[in-house]
Image (cartoon, rainbow, N blue to C red; front, side, top):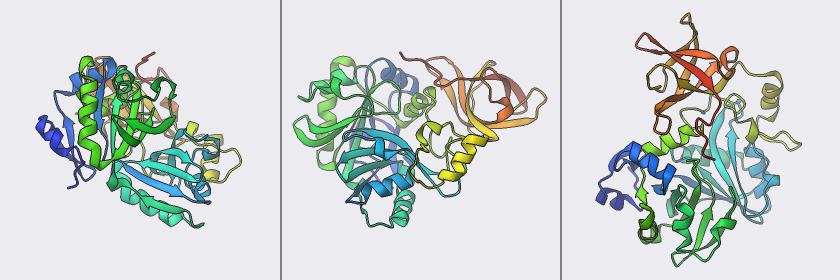
Length: 362
């Protein structure tokens, strides 16, 4: 099992450790609900060093990234990031990822931990024009500092004006006296904040400096379990649950990262046809009306018990205090407000299709 540079810190803090994507990772520290609300109301820190980082460089870098991702890389200015996915050539998704336009002829792709080898093999196999590829994943640590007090915490550690780093942009600079840190206004919680990338050698010092800076805001370490409930309240997809090699970005509601304006990308014609003609199933959010907690793979039915969908992700929302979930449902039942039922051990629990995100943080 692989470990991140923060492994000993997690253990010293008493984290419950589990195997995740081949890494020993903290699932929770003080409890999911407390950690979740810390991020919603103050500031929390996630070790996301298990994520993968690939550099794509050289004169043909843009051509390769444009061809293998669904979003339009040509729209990126230097210092911008975009959410995207790798179509798999069969209408499904190899992975979802972030694309950073780092400097001229140089992009950073940040991919899911569970897919590092698969994604690397995929992009290597598609690299027909000689772009320079580097898998930097083993050398890079990453922390996500998330929540309304994230900016005030990090601002103590840098001269960079963090308020000027707009959502989905980034700078490379100095934090806590360390240079060459990527400071990105991104995250998968919906509560604002930053993701910072740096070399493994400074990981423990970086952690300690951030926690000193955030002490006055009751900063806490956050495990992967709360990361899941946070992203689910926002309706963000999790690879392996809500999207995978059998789901198309159009079905998954990711048409907004699938751009058909002129340039070629893998599966463009197939996905354009799906967009124009419609799809048979759609990824939708639903809220429980009866008491119950949605779980992955539960069936959704109509009032007569006919299966109309299947749950991909579900939890008890700490903010709403009710069960919420995401599911692929037949298009006839995909309209907002449609009443559906969740089958739990042959009990039909009432729910309804709702618009995502489930909560509004504005």
